[in-house]
Image (cartoon, rainbow, N blue to C red; front, top):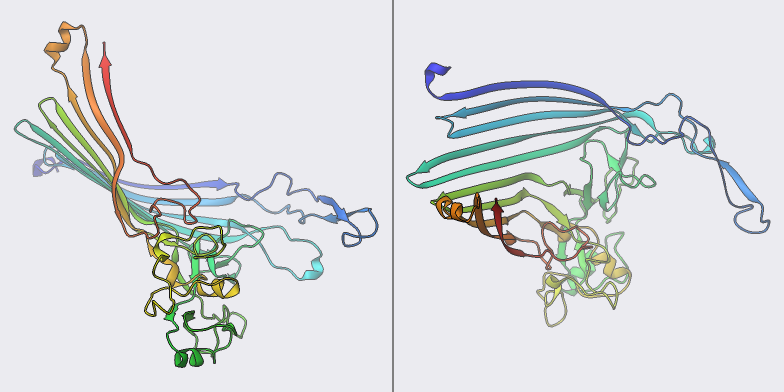
Length: 407
C-alpha cells in the first residue's frame, strides 16, 4: 500500500458489543405490592380506604439486551491532505420490555414481558481537507450522520391514534409493528369546501360533523368505506388515518471551514438537518382555539371567509368544528429541514516580536457570533430547532468580542 503513494494511513474496523439495559425495570418489581388508596365504595359513602394489588410481581423478567454491530474505515490520503472516516452500525434491542394483554378477569395489571425487539441502524461519515496556498492556509471538514429505527416485535401491537404515537406515555402507549418510534398519523387534507354542491356531496360521508359548512375542511376517504374514521370496521383494519412521518430528524450534518492568512484567522461552522418534519396541531397551533391565545402568524389573512373564498386554510371557528378543521392531517405537516450559521469567529494574533517586548507569550483578539443566520421553511415564526409545541423562548443571536492573553 505504501508503494502506491496514495494512502498515508488506512484502517479497517469491525466490532461487536453486547450489554444490558435496565430501562423500564422498577426497584421492587420482584415483590407483590399492595396499593392503599381511595375510598370504598367508589369514592363515596364509607371513609374506609380500599386496598388493591399493584402490578403483578414479575420474577422471571430480566434486563433488556442491546447488541451493536459496527463496521468502519479510517483513511488519510495525498500527503495527509485528505482524511476520511465512515461507520455503519446496526443496533438491536432484544428482550425489550413490553406490556402484555391478558383477559380482564386477571384483576390487576400484568407485568411487562421481555418479548419486544427494536432495530436501529445508520451511519456516520467525516471527510476533511487541509492544504495551503502561499500564505493562505485553509481546511474544511464535513460531518454527516443518519439513523433510523423500526419496531420489529411489540407483541403484535397494531394500535395508533391521531397525532404523535409514542411509548413515552406508559399509561397510553400507541405503536404499530413496522413503524418507527414517535410515528405520526393523520388524515389526508382534501381542501376547503368552496360551494354548496361540494358541501352536499361531502356530507353524505359518515363521520362528518352535522354542522359542517362552506369554508370547513374536507379529509379524504382513503379506504373507500363511505366514512371518515380512524379505524376500519373489522379488527385490525386500517381506517383513513395514514402514516405521515416520524419526528426523528434525518441526515444531520455539520461543516467546519477555517482560513488563516498571516496573523488573521476566520472560522465558520454551519449545521443543519436535511430531512425533518414537524406537525403543528392542537390548541397551541390552531387559530382561535381560545380568545386569549394568539394564533400562529401564518394563519393571518389566509383563513377562509366570504372575502377570501380561495384561502388555503379553513375558516375560523369555535368549538368542535374548529378541532375538526385543524385536527392532525397533512395540512399541519411542515418541512423543517434547515441550515444554520451556528458560529462565526474572526481573530487576529499579534506578532510574537511585539508581544515579547510586553513579556506576553501570545495575544489574540477576536469577534464571535452564534446563530447569526439560517435558511428554512418553517412557518409561523417558529425556529426549526424549537420544540414542536412552541413551548420555548425564541432563538437568540449572540455577539461577543474578547482577547486571549498568555503570559
